[in-house]
Structures are given as structure tokens and as C-alpha cells.
Image 1 (cartoon, rainbow, N blue to C red):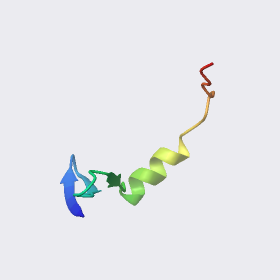
Image 2: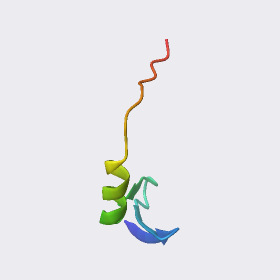
Image 3: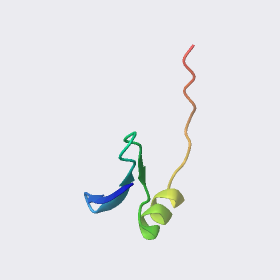
Length: 45
């Protein structure tokens, strides 16, 4: 596992497969979730 900061966001990356995980700061996650609304669901046919 490799821990690094990119654009002021802490990220973890698996050095074997390249999978990345990002966990935003608590105040960012809280602010973005409060204002979100689902306006539709796209279902390609």
C-alpha cells in the first residue's frame, strides 16, 4: 500500500494492482452529501 496526497486529498493505492481509494475530509463529505439530489436514473437500452 502506498499513501500519498494529490490535490490536497489523501489517497491510498495498491502497489500490486493500482487500485486507489480516496477518503475526503469529514467536512467536505458532509457538505457535499447534504446538497445532493437524484433527478433521474439513466438506463441505456
